Image 1 (cartoon, rainbow, N blue to C red):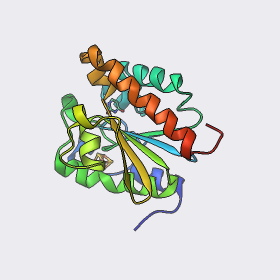
Image 2 (cartoon, rainbow, N blue to C red):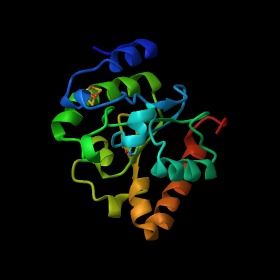
Image 3 (cartoon, rainbow, N blue to C red):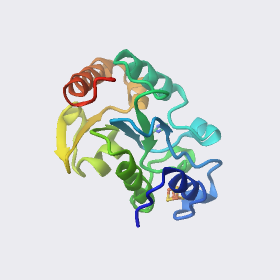
Image 4 (cartoon, protein in one colour):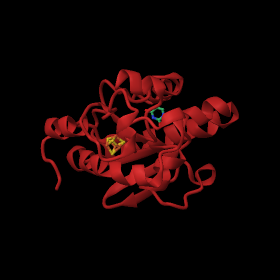
Length: 191
Ligand code: URA
Ligand code: SF4
């Protein structure tokens, strides 16, 4: 059953115990941004800083993400919404398991139902596999737009991966320029 109220959805999610990650979390990281945005970004799951602060992408990777977003006039305090596949931190920042992703995805689906974004950007392999297609090769298919149920979907490299492999930054930067073009084509002129 879809929840039709954002505040109710958030309140329910903040007490969720649908998977084992609830036992080790400090905070559920529901998401951040403008719920009326036409652009939704989806990461993998909270890391240590996110778990402590209750907000996605607030560590080093998040700072890089904000910088790239701001370059194309996107801003988490204004015109985008950012969340993750799983809302609770996997211990030691391991990949969220298929079971954990499956348990958590209903929250994300309900968020998408309420936000009704025109464009979804998957940040990294985990989100791309879950949202875009299970066999995606992100090194080859990043920056490519796919259409699914009337929503445009694109995957780009995860900002944490860019910190580990800075030589991939120009490629990811191109993805963001593609994104800016697409936004100009199909989103309201408030962008
Ligand atoms: N990495 C993610 O995928 N999500 C966050 O919120 C932070 C780091
Ligand atoms: Fe619930 Fe998702 Fe947290 Fe698991 S990760 S407890 S499903 S909110």
